Length: 148
Image 1 (cartoon, helix red, strand yellow):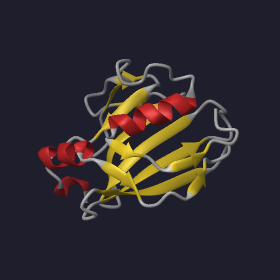
Image 2 (cartoon, rainbow, N blue to C red; image 1 turned 90 degrees about the horizontal axis):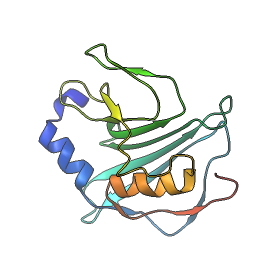
Image 3 (cartoon, one colour; image 1 turned 60 degrees about the vertical axis):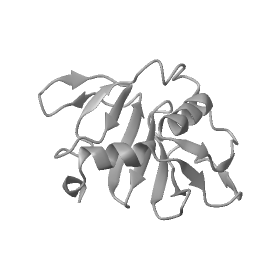
Image 4 (spheres, one colour; image 1 turned 45 degrees about the vertical axis):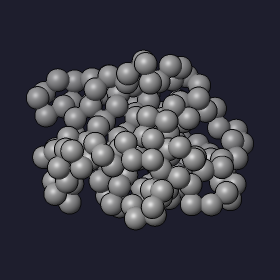
């Protein structure tokens, strides 16, 4: 359960270096499709998932997410989706970044920090910036295909 993780544990997991499992080329998802790619810590004790979700209805909508311990969302970047309402009733438009917060899981979001995400219209660049933000030091080998 996400509530079982402390903030310092979640912060450490987000900062922990993540590596691809192998060098198999992975096709990025087409519109309306999802992809989950496993990542490992350097000592192979922690498993992570990088999730990529593309909308079919809104062609520009994209969700990038990093999970730990199967279900714990450490970070999720939402682009061109619906606004998000935080538990304090403040509403944020897209793009926004969800970060784990102890006791709340991924229910809190902040505006997408421009110092980390420099060109959200370039999905390929944003994917790489998100992986860097989540400490993916050896990313999966992606077949870009028509991913834009």
